Length: 163
Image 1 (cartoon, rainbow, N blue to C red):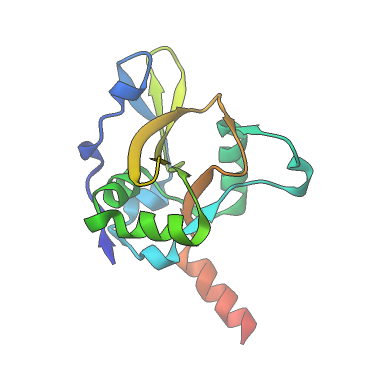
Image 2: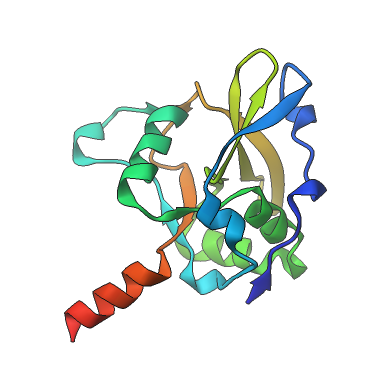
């Protein structure tokens, strides 16, 4: 289990063009979490069959994530994973799945100019994981993953259905 750190440990201003900012979107279910189990994390690239050779914006990705009902993990999860001892979870995800880019759509930041950003972690080179914010207007492809959790009640319901 990883105890989630406070979002105040992350300042998005260096990653935004227009400095005053606010949180414009938050998955309240993610906000209520106090800890996470790293082996329960889902990494969703939100692509569909009709998306072959197509990129989608962050807004389309957010819409698809809202449709599927999973908990969109937030900036606190990003901070926690980035500060985890030896970045164990991130390194495991990279070594097993070759994931190099993670977005945390549970928190959306808005700059004063109205542009919206999603917090992200990305792996550059061979070892370093970096923190950033990605403009929601930008293009996301199949190699960009969103970090989610299946809601507990849905897991219980699925397990009951299977027995």
